Each structure stands twice: as C-alpha cells, then as structure tokens.
Length: 60
Image 1 (cartoon, helix red, strand yellow):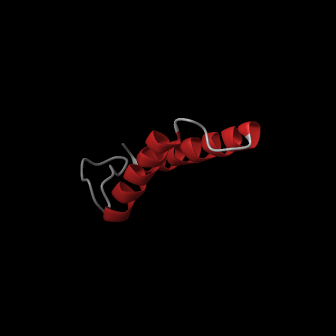
Image 2 (cartoon, rainbow, N blue to C red; image 1 turned 45 degrees about the vertical axis):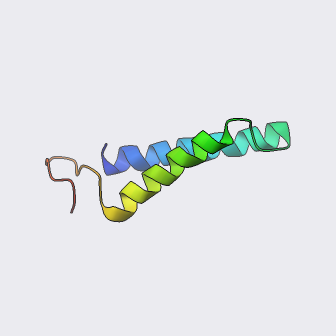
C-alpha cells in the first residue's frame, strides 16, 4: 500500500466511524475491528512500512 493509499484509507475509516457515532449517538457495534485497522495503519506509517510511488522500496 502506498503512502497516499494508507492516508486515504485511514481517513475513510476514521470519518466513517465518526459519522456512525453521530448517527447512532454511540460507538457502532463493530468499533473494535475498525479501531484495530486504524491502529495497524498508523503503526505501519510510524515505522515507515509503506511503498513509495515509483519505487519498490518499503521505506524512505
């Protein structure tokens, strides 16, 4: 996954959860798996585990 794809996916997950909280007035039933996905993406970004567009290197 490229850096841009990771950031967009992170944004989609966070905004989707936010909208569900507003709609439901509480955390959605599937909030734990969503938070795990968000955490995994954040961890990969923090350690530089993403593809840089135009190369095959995992970190830069």
